[in-house]
Image (cartoon, rainbow, N blue to C red; front, side, top):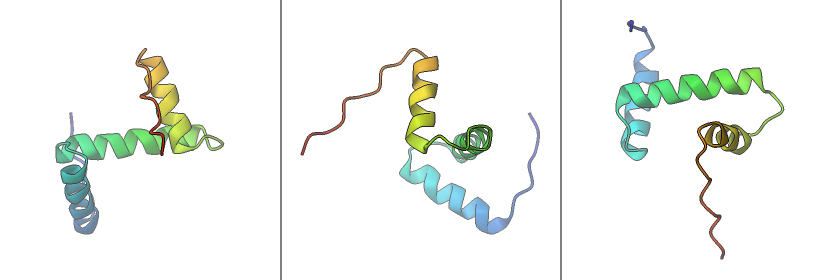
Amino acid sequence: MGIVKIDDQLHEEVRRASTVMCRSINAQAEFWIKMGMLAEANPTLSFHDIIKAQMAAAELPLPQPLVA
């Protein structure tokens, strides 16, 4: 584990997002870092495709979409 220096404004955005997503500030930052790394490694995949692949790798089924 280490310390990462980030801009104060970005830290505030992580803090606010962590509240909405019910994650700790560190967990929110880690999630964004992981998603960013996966997006850079897979530029043709959408966010949904990345999440779907990660859920499959963890052997977790995706919830069924809501029907309007």
